[in-house]
Length: 121
Image (tube, rainbow, N blue to C red; front, side):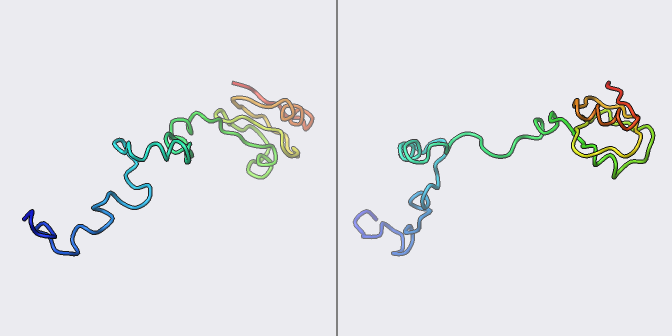
C-alpha cells in the first residue's frame, strides 16, 4: 500500500479536521505542547478556573435579608432568622423581635427605633 497515492484509503478519507487534530484551539489539553506557546503569549488567562464557584463556597456565603423585606414578608412579633444576617436597607414599620446570626449597626438602630429588638445568636 505504500506505493499507492492514498495508502489504502479513499481520496476523501482522512481529509477532515478531526484527522488533523481539530480546528482552532481544539485539543489544547494536557498533551497539546505545540499550542502552549500561543496560549501563554496571546490568550493568557486560558488555563485555570474562572467564573462559577463550587457549591461548597456557595454554602459558606452568608444569607442576608434587608429590613424592607421583613416588612413585606412577616407580621409583627417574633421572627426566627438564625441563619441570616439582617441588613439595614429600608424602613421598619412594624415592631419585630428578631433572632438572627448577625445584624448591621444601621439595622439594629432602625429596629430599636421602631420599638423592637434583635437577639444575636
